[in-house]
Length: 249
Length: 99
Length: 131
Image (tube, rainbow over all chains, first blue to last red):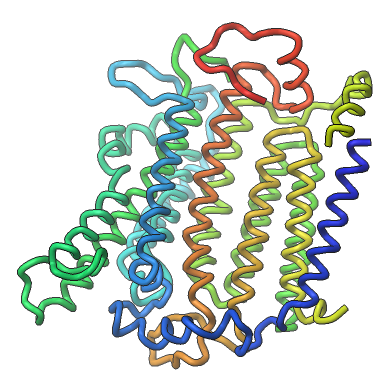
């Protein structure tokens, strides 16, 4: 009975959604309401107003900077929630990772991962640093970096990954994204502009464009490094087991 | 954009989503879901969103999948059979009335 | 049927949303529910990005003297870029709760979890997992 009611509900929802779809403006129409108004401004002025050729980066870091700052905080809060639920590594305690078992990844996986990893790291760095001009930016580069680290952990084991990226480094860098965002934002206020104006106090006007580029890069780098570290910490928290306690996997 | 590639990608999306939903093996569902993310990344590229394609490929097919696999490794792989669910048909009835 | 055939991207997004919703409310397994949530999220992303697409549009990047008039809408893309990353964090939080739940009750089946809570109070843990 419950099942039938639920299925009817889902079916009704689907029909309703499809009816809505059939009454929406045609997809790809340049004159549809979503593609008018503020969008033209973004497309035409973004390059001179934000100094980024990639309009998406401009929208994320300038026009909708508050959104992005809140979003960065959300990711950080997500890590905090995971750690609150599962607990954090503590210094001086011994932890077991479930992969310290006789079964190891095959030599093919290990050598392929070893060959690919430098390129993945380089590509993520490129994605972060080149994000103003080509597709990419802090979030994209951080995600690529995290995926590369996950590959490392999958091929060589969490234990070795935990040694390569030691907890001390992770603890220090995890907060990088909200911190750089906030500091650069406040620096804009001190520089006489609005929040997130990408300015510094007491810098001559001629230097402002270069400064804006560097500050944008700083924020991008903060988001990239912080995001990657947050994902790695989440993986470590999910996979870790305390010796003596917990459940055998 | 009525080109064939987008149609194929959209069809693949629906197929993978259904497969991920109806598989009893959780690990298989997660792997199919990572395929779903990869198809989605290709579709972002078709929709002229290269930034999204990059992120979706790294996050959806990489990070999310590893997190899911870790969680399954720590719990159990197969979905439990609802063997004795029919025994409490009465409870089910009550819930549906509440709903 | 109006523009259903023109808007087939939207239609697929609607179908995917219903698939994910089915997974969330009908499948008893919690990990299946989380996968369903992810499918619902991506379906909404698909809808929003295809809303911003223009016929013959190019990616909104000014490199190489591309003209602004022919670019697709950058706003949904920027919003959804952050949305994808937020989706991963919510998934991570949900999975950590799942692991804790399994540690406490030894099952991921929602029906069984509800019943177990009626039957016996588990050994005193640091946190009582809720079903």
